[in-house]
Image (tube, rainbow, N blue to C red; front, side):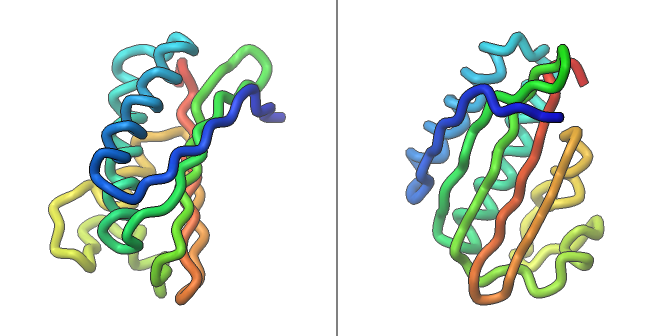
Length: 137
């Protein structure tokens, strides 16, 4: 069972908000003593998801949570937007898929960087992506 120990919400509407979000995620990861490699993986995944949120939905909200399960602590990030949604999640989860001609990691690369990855999207309503990275995993 995963328990949420703390929550913080960051609205991301402009580039300075992206920097603020990255800094908050880093602070939380350091606070729970996440190793440098896992911090880098978490920040890289967060950067990809926030870039997608800015590019395709003109921003949104990210909830940052410190979570625990037994003796493990981690960071869970939930990115929510009210953009156009993703019509074909299965296609978007394939390596090499891009609608924006970007060279980013894409959603499959982001999924590989974290311990848990969940995506829900409804065309015309938006997308919610939740990732979890354990401090020691």
